[in-house]
Length: 319
Ligand code: TXA
Ligand code: MG
Image (cartoon, rainbow, N blue to C red; front, side):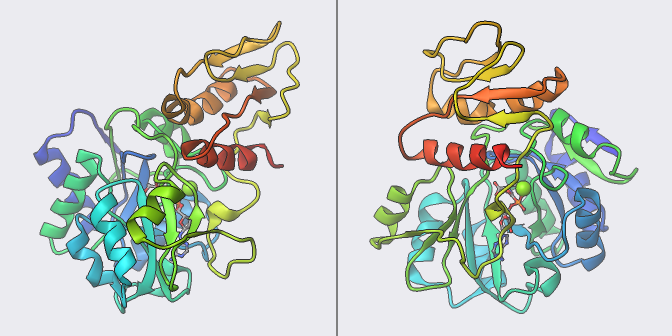
């Protein structure tokens, strides 16, 4: 595979051409890195599942360059979803909508719903634009990690996860450390009111303000299949413990004001909740790189982004 640092318009064009030719391109977004394929090419999309080791019926998010592309993939888009798109795209939000004929079963996992997102990272936005300039409709991309593992927030982490599974004509675009650090807020817009399926940096309150509607948090038993809803996910090899019990030799991650317990190995001291989210996945990776058996994590309190962080941590700690 070819790794592109300091991407220019020309190198991004090359990567867009590779996508159009059926190859895979891992790319930075503001949330986490994605592993992209032409969303209209069943063979390329099948490779995503192979490289990730992901079950075939798990749907993929389609990344597009702007809200104006939404109607290609979705039909009967409710007004509240258009408002969400206008307010938060490009940005860390995925909308689940009724699919058009373009969104085939191999993207949606056989559901009549399609997930769409316009990412804001300049490299991903340009990649989507160049891909559309070549006649492409959208780029299917899950997080660029092996199934169930921790999402990558740097190009190094992508290589660590997928390096041995990518082939000679695939690309990895570097775009620095992801700004947000955890995956997009997923909102099911197929009903009369929005339903938050996966919390993220765009909060329930923000969604409700824009929609003028009350949103519903995902209730277990939702009919929508979404792998982020699995009980165990985002897991490092090290055991993640959340009960505050820390033994010597454990990794330790908490907000800066919390002291390191005796003997524990401090892996990070974020000063803000945003910094906490941004560093979380690289800290989980660091625990594995150091060969630690356990990492004790003190969860942040509060709502908004803290809810999304606690969601990921509860899944990372489930076995
Ligand atoms: O921030 C993100 O969303 C990142 C970046 C790369 O965009 N992507 C990401 O993709 O997290 P992935 O595949 O790791 O997680 C996407 C979640 C999955 O749980 C998937 O099941 C759900 O979105 N999803 C995608 N399409 C869906 C659909 N049509 N219906 C229900 N859930 C869907
Ligand atoms: Mg994922």
